[in-house]
Image (cartoon, rainbow, N blue to C red; front, side, top):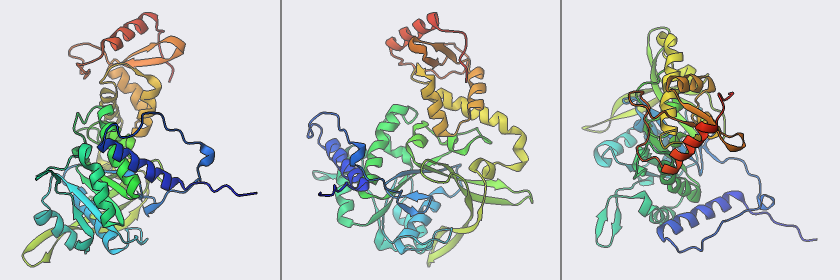
Length: 402
């Protein structure tokens, strides 16, 4: 009897991603239809890690933090480690590979390259995405248009292990606070990472307020950024009990590995080339605990509950901005964003969220259409949604049990 050879899941995933990028570059080039893959044809495979439990090959990651915490420098430190096959902060060794960097904020020549050199990077293995050639013009890189061409160039380079996007919001052409637009815009990055089997690291900022809440829920923009990412890393400066400031890089969320623990780091200044000053990262000791525990200032513990509710309120404004949403969807999104049900319940009461029961016992949530209540309701709500809300409110029950 002939044995059945089961396909390699990573290869299938890479092939699917390449087809998706090619189809996006040439709309209509693929026949329309639903693609189904039988589970029995798949071969279970473990996650392939570039940095064990921190950076996964073929997956999207977010690195977030407040301004001034060295997020870009941290990303470049990780890039330098990859280009030399150096050691990660936990002492494990990286595979050697090439790195792609797309930066919309810093100049490669006077900012990024000096930092890379300061941290010992092999410059021959670093490639900056500086534009796309269309006809006889070089235009700014557009992920919606140029991702398939970037895949072609990356395959020519070969052995790409890491792609850095700084800031990750640059990949979103539409409204970065709308879940559907963010998810649609992030998919080409997810597909590119899968096609190249490289780690994709997008850099973002923390939103204002929410200190003391779950750090992963504070990433600026739509919650879709953290929901789509498999791992969210957070960087912050905190006050220790001895009064000394310290910086910590921690895991705020992980769907594919441990979601706690971190490393202290310091931002130093050095002169990699005479006359050229650059910042660099010096890693410190490992620290235990969740991101919220590690990054909460001990002098502000009393504000934790209030800050968590504020963060949950921001979350609800975003997820309900487009109108009526099933409550189970809200709760699933909250779990992905690290927002506790207790904080979400209190925030929903604070925002006077309307909760109604529809056909089949399904509960729906929406923000109140009341002026002066601070509910940031989308102005372009679909009429069908409004009618559905009115119908639900007429036939709904008194309350939903969490």
